[in-house]
Picture 1 (cartoon, one colour):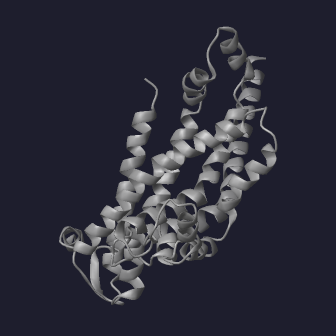
Picture 2 (picture 1 turned 180 degrees about the vertical axis):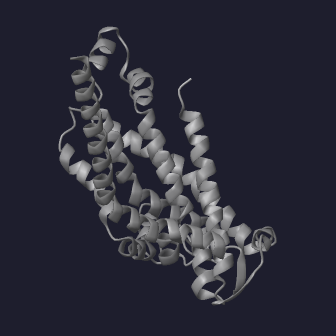
Picture 3 (picture 1 turned 30 degrees about the vertical axis):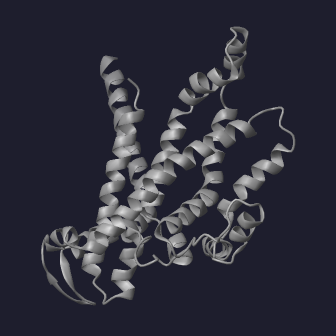
Length: 305
């Protein structure tokens, strides 16, 4: 009897193992197309661009130079200027946009606000507009004789037009205003969605204990939104490091190179100047490096104690 039981047990294990092998094989067949596409369009370009960054030359005529392109970065004044411009946009715009998104989402989450659907749509709508279309619109609005200067003079805030696009400081301000207008609503949706999923009983208990709305916001809402704050901060940081469309269409990197960003410099190295794809690939890995560094710092700051 025991021999029969052990034989049945062995047969069941064999059938289970054969089924498991078949299941794994079928699973690989299902994921194979996705693996091939990811390898072809993501993994291969990443490896190829890393290898390309070790070459230098005009067009397709390149020579292996090792890490000479990295050394060249430190002696390239245009790269250093593009890096500093990108950092200015990053340091100023990202915290301002995240805080503004958080404040707007808190206001739009109020149950007493009328026409809440209209306001949510109005704030979110800019992020679905065309990048080129809204950039050209901002360029027209902030021109020397544009509607922005006309409005500021009409209300008496300024007496002479502001050179929004021809002054280095005001050109950066224009870019920051444009980016903030475009992406604030995008981040606001994440905050608003997270706020609506917070248990209302937490706020009811806080009100019973006499906690003011301001303290509820800072000691209940903000701590519970920490994962969303981390997500929006990381994504906004990566997006700002890759900033290209607004600068290209509003200021074209000007005046001079005062608003030139790393992504725009990569474009110039690849298509505008004498093509040097190897050096352009090296600059692109600078963006990857700083994106990873800032992401790790933000994860470290936001981690639970």
